[in-house]
Amino acid sequence: MTPWIEAMRLRTLPVSIASVTAGCCAVKVYGHVAWLPALLCFVFAILAQIASNFANEYFDFKAGLDKPGREGPRRGVTEGDITPRQMLIATCATLALACAVGCSLIYWGGWWLIAAGAAIALGVFAYSAGPYPLSRHGLGEVGVILFFGVVPVNLIFYIMTGTARGDVVIASVGAGLMAANILIVNNYRDREDDSAVGKTTLAVKLPPKAMIWLYYLNGLLGVACFLLLGGNFDKWIWLIPAGIYWLVNNAIATTMGRLKGRQLNPLLGMTALNFLMFTILFYIVA
Image (spheres, rainbow, N blue to C red):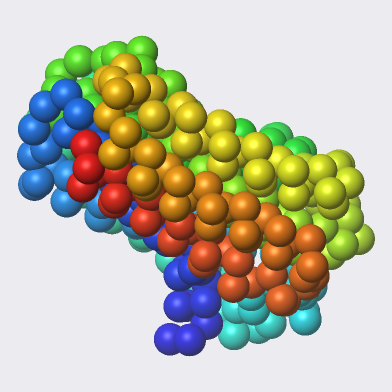
């Protein structure tokens, strides 16, 4: 089971939980959170992310972009622990299970959610496969902002309130920016390996210091966007989760500049947990 657990990339899974929690924060500001659809959203998000991680490992292997002994977490397919066929089957099975869970949300959100679910399923593959894989053209962070921020937050808000709001859209972008910092750490760590095999991530395109500053900026803009929810700037208590997040975000960004290679792996989990901690604290004080 160890290679499969590694392929799930457990360090990054809190970002799915945080994205759904961010949507629940928006709902709480304006209404009442319904816990059954919220729970289904949590399960769907986690399964979809695992499917995306599996797909990334499979398609990067097929494209020759992974090599044994890489700086990042061990890749089971590349190292021979998992066959490519097994990984492809696991990808499709996990995605199918996610879709089954997502279909249950039709009861609350309506039949149009089938189209939304299909778009999310395509996004699982678009990151690593297709005619223009996002991860190989410096657009991985854009994909994260979309599928870990804009899509989940607005979908959850609509499912539970039946409406859409401009400030929720802005907050969803903020959530996406905070989620994108996880990929920034990942690609910053892998920039030398990726450059050697022709995988053009944003970290390959930009200087290392620019990626660190982007990490700082994403955290700042992410929090600022999220604090627009409800337009109530007089709620000073909202500054508590924002301040804690920003301090941790800065500490991680500063640490990034002093580490390289495998030393950066713990920062992936720390970034994901910082995002999750922010959304939980925000939900508590909202």
